[in-house]
Image 1: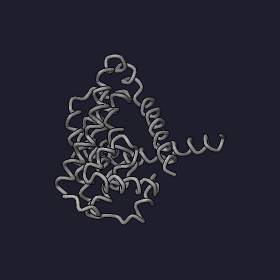
Image 2 (image 1 turned 90 degrees about the vertical axis):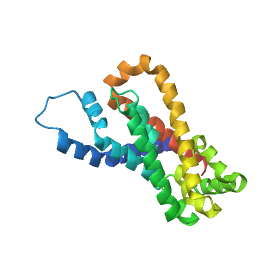
Image 3 (image 1 turned 180 degrees about the vertical axis):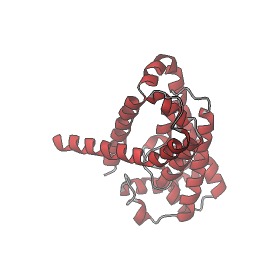
Length: 228
């Protein structure tokens, strides 16, 4: 029990550190250009200003692209926090999520890692690869409908797709539609509770992000161990 708790905590700390390191270059570029000498704002408003900048566009783009290839944090994790922010360009960030997903999918499809390397990627188990192969054998391109809620990382689907002769343009379209559907469902739920939670979340972006990361890391760990 204690060993499991230690593993869960270490897993959370690793994921939290990776998220910060991934976002840090984009935030640094934003601070370099926009921060300094202007009107000082509180940290929550500062985060909103960052996500209103073009650097947030590229953060979302590369986050989504990397998640289709090697990264292990879904882009929706980032976008759902933005739902509660007072910025007007939420839809534009969703577009960059779509562009990044398409770019990452194309890259993974072309690179086409062999099966022996796919299960070496972070948070991938050999049984996940076997499961996706079974889905592809049974359903072809429609195997993608299992991805959003199965817990199996999207990158397993993208790297294996070329083995089944799936038509790339159709695969791209279907993959983007399926993945955006997950975000849309979560978005509708959060928008419905927005009036209740907005004031609290607005005052506590960092706390909410930390709690959200812990919940995400716990779910990721659960899926990973379930396939071990």
